[in-house]
Image (cartoon, rainbow, N blue to C red; front, top):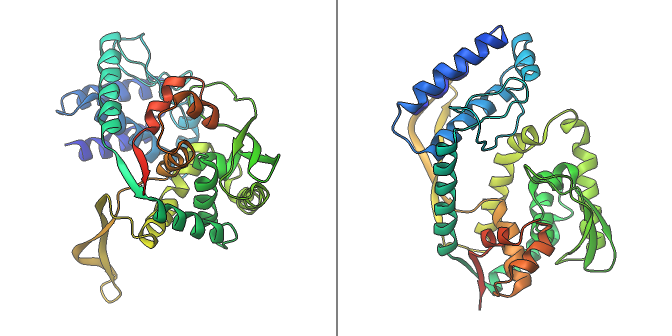
Length: 323
């Protein structure tokens, strides 16, 4: 099954000693992946999980070689050359055959369309409560609470808040933002954004996070930073949405088994907890929903979020703040 494939592929790749062996090993496991009855999108996720597993593996001479060969810490993109997706040793890009690329893009379009129809709502009083909590979190001793608050007030991405983003206030509710991140795009020029809370206070909290976490994140790629902080940011999101009693969407979170101090093992039944079905990115969407007051204006979304293409705004049309 897919889980077994992930474990075997990761293990075998870590054993590779030469570039040729790496390429042959990957081609073998990719062919094996094709025999598993899953969608192209699921295959891509599986490939991404292999890469993340390699990134978090104990550092060793072999792992350093993998990094030098471009297998670890690489971006994924859809290409039109090559007959099968493989890791190009030179630049670490996974390529697809033309027909596979078209099928994958079609799947993405279908998911985006479905998402735009799946409207999430939040009452105006709940959103005001959310902003009120985030005002307190701007001075929290927990970096994750500060990060969530800054995202709510600025609509910035996690990686921008934790690493690359800079804010230079120009008024009480505007600031020049630099350090935009977006996979596959060139460096973004600084531009003015709206902050839904005092820009000076938000900028000060942003500087604090990056100063405190600077040594911890030193030498880490953006993907490594996001992988390291993803769980803690998610937990803070669950906490925030529970505090405002938002129950529009929920999901069951696997909390694992309890630790037995006698046997020194995790045993008993798995525990599940009902949590809000949201992600850190939903704060970015809520920021847009609040500023646009329910209107559909993709050009304004492009200006507020620094997108290059107006059509990207369709990703931000599935949140509504209602009375």
